[in-house]
Length: 171
Image 1 (tube, rainbow, N blue to C red):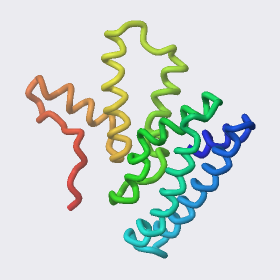
Image 2: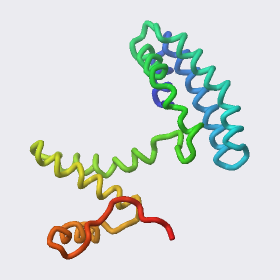
Image 3: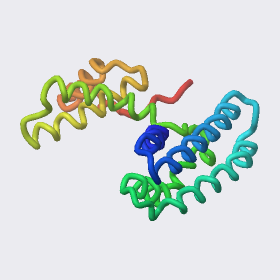
Image 4: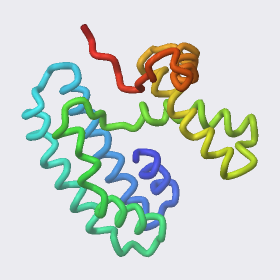
């Protein structure tokens, strides 16, 4: 989101005030998030401190939903429409305010697609999609992809029980 606001600043004109205001708000949100993450404030404290910042964002977006520049207007409308999802991290334990984890998980698939030119057919895509999901799920759990595939391929032949992608219980 910060990149979007910085882009609006560069556009100038009527988009600049949305960009500058949005950048300030994003920085204020992350200042409070880092205080929470570092244990300086509780989740309830985070919620209290972000409430006025959230209102500032709502007022800023409301001023720009009819912005004459299409890029500014689109960002303002989209953030107003989907804005409540942006604040999930305030309410839900374990949710981060960024999408860095998801981006890192997708990176390997994107690089594979670029280097191999993707699959040549819809059927190929239907094979690749679950395989990439399996591989990334196992990587996230620090489990062996090869061991999982050996077990999965052996299961129909009755050699082993089918493996699960669900994280193993700690214990």
